[in-house]
Image (cartoon, rainbow over all chains, first blue to last red; front, side, top):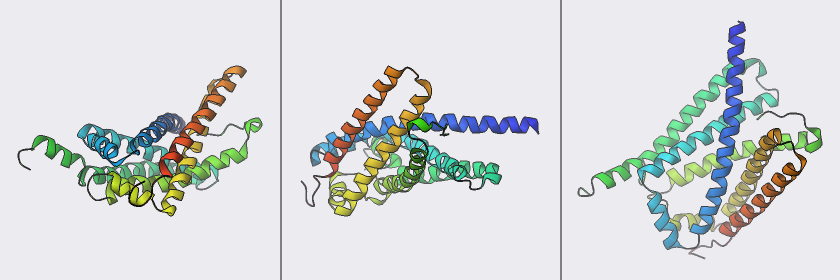
Length: 134
Length: 121
């Protein structure tokens, strides 16, 4: 029981450290995002040109990673917010499990949507690898 | 992010605000990612974005998103640095730098969003 309690503390602390690290990453990304979009929005040619250059497997991979970081911060933040407002405190373990499941499930759904739609990773791989076919 | 009762620096109101903005961002950010990566047909291009951002409703949503995201992110950054930086002058320096970054990013973002009109600038 004592071992289990220690385990839970470690898990909560790890979640808290990851929340801070993901938050630091996200604010840096947000500032970069605002800067890049501002300089892209000057006209259609610049915007479409650079967006097209982002449409390759490397950037798709990075975008899917970014979504994973966002969704971690999102679900862990909602989990902590529930407890802060005194909700489900007696069910902390279940809420932790639910947050992990929701994180991975929503990440999988968004990643699938990003990778399979027109302009997605699979389409980019087909274009890069099978130029002669299209 | 755990709150550590620092009443002097603003306290419970800011703590509550960080939660409320977090919940708002959870909804709008999910919509933002889903809309730009799934609902648009074809490659993400200028025309589709411009048509959407040209409407007053989307301008309002995007500017509120910008303001809330910058606040939540930069206030969070301050909270983290607050735990590790204890020298008075350095804290003031960091606080000032974060405020300047906030103003610059806010200005850039609003200047990006406002000029969009249907059919181009």
